[in-house]
Image (cartoon, rainbow, N blue to C red; front, top):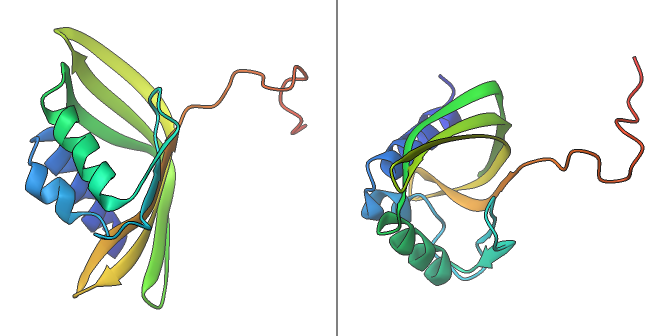
Amino acid sequence: MAELHDRITKFFNAIIQEDIEEIRNGYCQDEKTYVVLEGPRYSTKGFSMIAKGWEDFTVSPIAMTKIVWTEGPFEEIVGDMGWISGITELYLNVGGKEVFNTFRTSFVFKRENNDWKIRHEHVSAPHPDPYGVGDWLKN
């Protein structure tokens, strides 16, 4: 595995295990860190709010059971910054019901104290036909 893939796997495992300290440890701990979520809230800015969001997640009826890359992950490191991106399948248990979703997933990392920390995160599902013309990419 590549360096950022190893780090994001550690982060994903912390989510599955609901290890709030390791989840928090995955982020740059300042108020400029920014995440774009797959949920009803568009985004969260600042480590303190990101940490609170994860703390609330771990006591919610949502439990992540598995995260699988189905495309990629693709990654690049340039100096003390790097990114990893691809398509992920998320498997969850929501109030006793098994739920499955596919998302576009990207993380931007910054190297801090010999560890990679998430500086920006984007997880989203595509809209089926946002402009009413289908996919403009033609074969």
